[in-house]
Image (cartoon, rainbow, N blue to C red; front, side):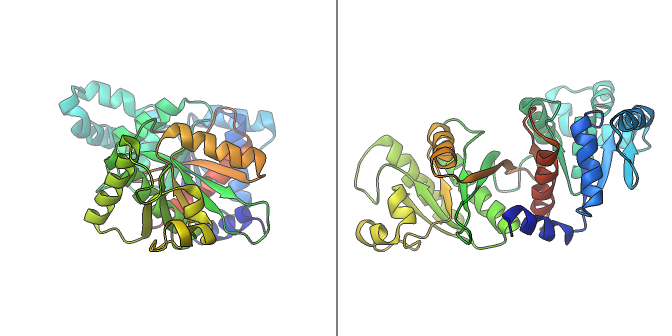
Length: 328
């Protein structure tokens, strides 16, 4: 069974609800219908009901079982605006601006997530990543104990039965500090537990293994390790490690014999965005791994971004990831 089918089966057990704020996009409407048809979750579409109905009829999609909410006329609009005003008034936001902002489906959907009315939100088919993340950060904020929003990819091996890897950060933070690296490690461990359901074994990667080289870039990774130690995190981790010492048992025995990972890392934290982005694309293109993501992580509640070039299937699959991320 492909990993996505396994994840879909687990998502069905969540019994959640996904809000899709880009309800006039054909891909999103089709995805909403497929999510309901596959019994993955309940779905809420955000837009004018007549416009959504007309668009659905145009593309030949049934809206049976799908809830449609128009933020502009919803009974919770003023309550949402009041909550948003309290969050942002120190930034100079007026009550009038808060009310206007909450009529934007991105912000209304994020507030539904914040208030626990839905499990999570998927957006980005018709909005930029910047707009999606801005609404998420301003409404739901960052997970308690963290200061960094990052991303990860599930890398699925072409060899059946081989363990999937998580790569992070490959899409968001260009040059993380030591504290941000520690946050990324913690967020990715959380992502692995919730989505893949197994125990993370986290390697903080470098071009040095346990002091084999001295450089300020290596020192940043070591400092991130010390931050994780101080936080007393509840997952297995080690660093600084070269890639072979992280994932090859025979190499780990010679380069890092005392490593708790023993060359069996399943979650790889890259020292910066350049190496992370290059790394996942190398593995995808040269080794034939399938890259699922990016998964946005580190938010206080699950909101994920899509590429504007996404397919209907991408919207469905990302909704599955969000449902799994919503598990406490």
